[in-house]
Amino acid sequence: RMSTRARRQAIAEETCAIVQHGFSQHSSKRIDLKDDINRSIRESVFYHALSTHHTSGVVLSQRENGAQMRIEVIRAGTLAAAAVLANAGHNVVALNFASARNPGGEFKNGAQAQEENLARCSTLFAALSGPAGNGFYSACRTGEKQNDGLYTSGVIYTPHVAVFRDDESEALLAHPWLCSFLTAAAPNAGVARTRAGVSQEQLRQVLRERADRVLGAAVRHNHDAIVLGAWGCGVFKNDPRDVADAFASLLHSKYKHCFKRIAFAILGGPESNLFAFRQAFPATETRMPSPSSRGASGAGKYFLVMDFEATCEKDDRKWVAEIIEFPAVLLDAATFEIVDEFQELVRPTERPKLTRFCTELTSITQPDVSNADALPAVLSRFNTWLGKHALRERPADVLAITCGDWDLMKMLPSECKRKGLTIPAALRSWCNVKLPFMQQTGRKKAPGMAGMLSALALPLVGRHHRGIDDSRNIAAIVRELCRSGAAIRPTGGPRADELMGDAAVEAPEAVAAPGLSSLDFPILSTGS
Image (cartoon, rainbow, N blue to C red):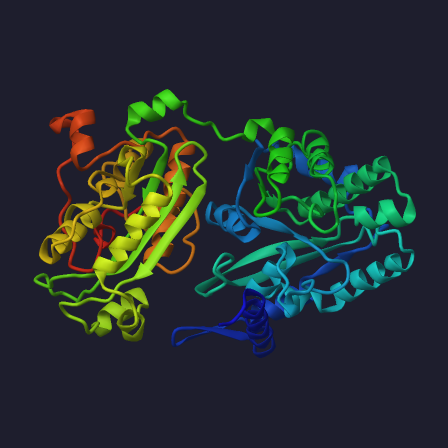
């Protein structure tokens, strides 16, 4: 079995081939990237350490817009955050945490850090290997000879970079999107302190100067949104409080009216990184519902987001479906963060052979299910997984959430009845996420999952109609709704009746075609 590092190495090799040949491929579709690659190389700019691009005169000319600035500290990857801002219509630029030695860091060797992820998922590596990158890395090498860990204060601006992979799964995207990047190296605080005797105050000054140059370049190129993060807080050993304070001091003064949206995307690393930025930007703290309000809502301690995939045939309303993917994403109902995941493919036994339509829709192949266990074994392991979180004996501590009522009102009950299986108690009540979405947005009807993501300015991550990816996307919808103050309550099953009374429970939706959840029905347009 391929190791994680070897897998990343293989992905890097594929990325290099994509950049070299100028196209990626999704299913049988060839996606041309050559023009984007050439443009990003041609239009990249290297601002050397003595550049005045960030001077007050340049920045002040942009402050006349008086933009109302919204700052967010989120647990997400750089590309996921950038996609949200881009989908919301912003001209977004993201900071690339440069290694100071090689374009893309050590991504070719399977290393994993922020820059390596960007290099594997986009054409950024090609631009950093061009003329602008040559100036930057030459300056870094000159600085490295001084052995003080400070490298260079130079910045590369790279526009029009094609992002052609999902940043989480690193799977190829059917529809690449464009993003601009600022590549800059934070000081290597560990080396600076131990080898050169650089004081903490000197490091703070360097961080503030480089943060100024990064923000100044973003303003110079008319970006109204920027994605930053825990820059240099990994192997470079900068104190996250110093990095957060460097950006905070500038964003609340010199750059106060220059951006509409600023996201500090922090994923991985110690919790102290996230904590430091939330301390520096206290207004961005997620508003948590009190324990009493959670109890009143019927949500309990956890949300369990699920979206089954099932056997199906196009236009066959009499088809008897069987579950072929059984996914679940467990969210903490207070922090809305993912606690754990469960995912297994399932072998159908009533109609063992998948239709071509089913495979095209879900990407699940015949060998995938033929080598999987049937539903009784999978359901048994799911029960064991619930027990690991004490949810088998305390089902009231969790509320299942689905996109539509099909999964837990029709699909699982009907298959369990046919096969003599018991439905886990935790899945007998659920929340159809479309209902809180309608209440929160004021819409009379809810779109499907993709439409809700778009309406909430969230990216669709992974592959639509793959159960685990859809579950993660629905979890993102739940998180966003909760953070905006929505109440997540049972809308189906016994707990809905107990909480609200029969009159308060919405009538069941129209039942989707077998194998398709109700989110696949064409509903009202979202206006996009």
